[in-house]
Length: 246
Image (cartoon, rainbow, N blue to C red; front, side, top):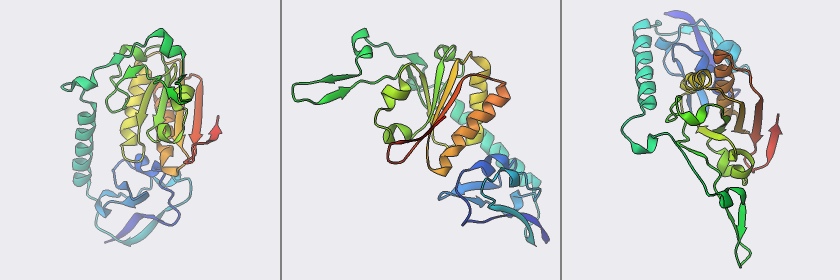
């Protein structure tokens, strides 16, 4: 049948992933850094994703397409919900237990120590465990009154002094907005913001477009939780420099 359906221009798409979050039917996914329509049967053609695209890569066209299948969409959404619950499961593995890391006063105050050969040893500034957003317990005691760092995974590898400049004095939460479910991130962060007295939020992301998903998840969660706190957003270049700090 001929009907209205989404079309994504692969040349224009920058892989930011905002359309993936906007599509309530789960019809769009990121594959190889580009947004793609998973199946005609998942797309209702209403265009909820259209205003979210920052580069105008999405349009609504008329073409021959399979009919929208609401039952298949419901099954898909149930599967996504099942995966979210699996991510949120906090039992079983001892490594998922919420804990604060106590360090000796001497080393926590000294960021680097020089040996006889002139080499410098950097000390970890991590204050809690776990750090993966998927594993964080929203009721963990270290979250209440925390200055929160929400970092895209790659930032700590690209930026040389990440522990000293960002992790120190903060509760650290990390995730990959390209490989993980940003809708789930927004829901999990909403829970964290709602249940705890967060003092400030610092977000670090890489300069690549697909990394913008973590910023969108944080801002969505702040709106959902009606959380107004000091907010800082830092963009790290792939060469390790600070591209933007606002």
